[in-house]
Structures are given as C-alpha cells and as structure tokens.
Amino acid sequence: MQTSNSGGAHSRKLNSRMLGKLLVIAVLMFGFGYALVPVYKKICEITGINVLTPKDDTVKDIGNTQVDKTRTVTIEFDANAHGPLRFRPTVGSMQVHPGEMVQVVYEVVNTQARSIDAQAIPSYAPQQAASHFKKMECFCFKQQTLGPNQAKQMPVVFYIDPALPKDVKTITLSYTFFEVGGTGKAAS
Image (tube, helix red, strand yellow):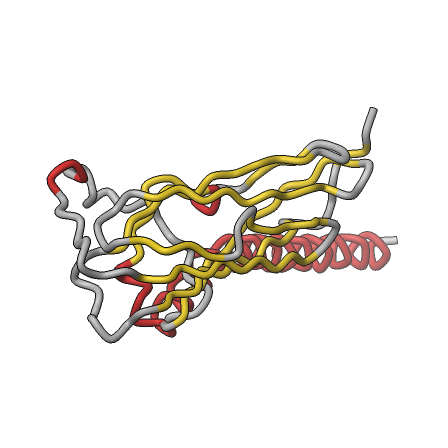
C-alpha cells in the first residue's frame, strides 16, 4: 500500500512539474505574441516598407507654410484591398502646389454581412517622397470598424513639403486596406 501511495505522490509531483512547465510556456507564448506588433513596426521602420504613418505633430503651424506656386506636383492615388472589402479613391490623381493643403477621399465598402475591423497601410513612390508627404488627417492613423455591408467615405488631408526635391514631379500614394484579425461579429 505504501508503494502505491508513494507512486501516486510521485505522479502528482510529475503532474505539478508538468503544469508549471506548461504555464511558463503559455506565458512565454503570450509575451511573444504581445511583442510581435512593436517588433514588426520596428522592422518595417528600419527597412522602410509598410510604414504605419503616425500623425505628423510637427505641422502645427501650417498657416505659416508658404505655398510654392511655381511648382506643380502630380499626386496619383492607388488602392488595394485584401479580404471582404471594396476600396478605391474618388479621384485617380490631382495637381498640387508644394505647401498647399489638399483633401482626397477614399471609399471603402464592407461586402460581408458581419462587422469587420480593418487597417490601411500607406506606401509612397518614389520612396524619397514619403518624408515630404505630410498628413494632417488620415484614416490610416487607426483601425476602422465597418458594420455589415457598410460603405464609408474617409478623407486624407495632406500637403507636400516645399523641401521636396525639384526633380520629383509625380508621387504615388498607395494604400493597402486589409481586415485585421479575420474574425468578425455576425450581424444581429
């Protein structure tokens, strides 16, 4: 009898040890998952691809910016969607003067009968133009929630920094809009 009690105690001890190891693994997995977002952002920032554009807080004195009427830059707008979204700019391109405040509107439609969360990631061509493309307002600053079959118009308010190199005559602003998480809430 004593042997079976000793065997049961040994089993409980092994089970407790295994439980402890599994808890440590679960905590490490959670920590790894939690750390992925900042690590991804840092890698994208270093490599210069898919940079999430933060709101530009350096443009508080926009009223003092001089508009360079001697130059015209063509801004082309592009949209790509992944998942259950239709996404497009309302205009294909426009002519702007560096320093001039401009607004363009993008339209997105959730084609599903469920709510979804989505995020837009901007990219610029040529890449050197990215630091001169100053956004005051943009739907890309945060995730968007779209209800079932909802259509939404989303503005981008921006100006081109007059310090843009003179040889850059065309800038393409492209957004990729994708569903975040992939699990939506069913319509009620």
